[in-house]
Image (cartoon, rainbow, N blue to C red; front, side, top):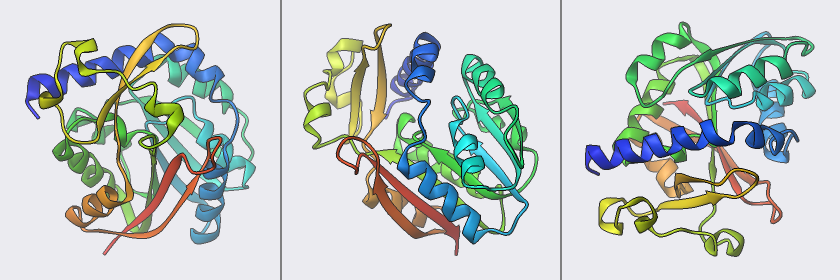
Length: 245
């Protein structure tokens, strides 16, 4: 993928979250099954207190899922959108047993890793990696997250399995909507609209289990668990838990 196209898609998503932050927050208040299952998995597999890094934390709802599953420890949430971080801090101020703080960081820039400032028993990146265009960029980000793991730590991803779902297939936009063509992007790339309140367009990549396994192998990681959950069909999100070899 050409760098100019990659930057155009990254900027598209930055504008998307800046435009829809409040509406996005309102539609992300519930704690879906996948998040709760993952939180329970971390509680049973990692000794307390747990140091957790949530990369692309949005409004911080995974911190609330952790607290509901009685995970105890410290939590750092990173996101590129300041409005979402403000909402996250307000919604997680009094979680039992979990000390939360938040900081701004943009994964597209390698300097983000300095914001993490430590190693973690768990690094989670939920519904985030599929918003970064280009396999090489996704691989770089995954490797950077893996480098923040403490020995024996777990890296958890979730990705949106929208291809083949009739609800989303009918909403896919053409690349001409943003002045590109299919030749400019990679297989699995897509554009989807947001029509809840403000209208906005976001870039998303169909990151399936095969690509997760390939990314993991390229970063010296092993997928130790995976499952599907969420959405009306109960399988809209793919969750994968990774460890260093």
